[in-house]
Image (cartoon, rainbow, N blue to C red):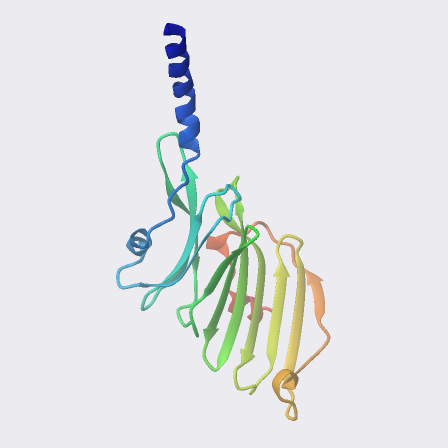
Length: 214
């Protein structure tokens, strides 16, 4: 019987770490997320999903205060002695939104859609992918459009692929006789390249400043 007991003990010794490695990292609780918000801020948007491909549930949330609005990306992690979530990116957002930001994770890409401004509005879509070497969220695409919500002036659109540098720029002017989809007449799109060094959440360009520079 003695060899059998030793064999069982050895099996348990090797099985315990393997079993521990398969414990899922618990999803961030509402209390944990709320505890990370600035004093007086409220939770605007939240999404839970896997943006780094390890099978664990990461969390992204937007907090809105009176004079500050920001998005935080929290990566699920596991070490030999601990597990939980760690920050891997913060994006400062415009403090004048026209609604809650829409946040989603699509095939490992974090997508943020944000509408800001007033009668003249800016619609922005940010796309990020997790960079494991830098442990940061890298900006891979940015689309921005400035337009009049009453069609009182022209519009400008920018679509920028930061991985290739490819940009598409479109401009349009109001059509006095058109309605709906025909309210704006667009000129032929301009295509060019604007290579960029790697940009991350914290170094994301301001969409309005990008549009002003076109």
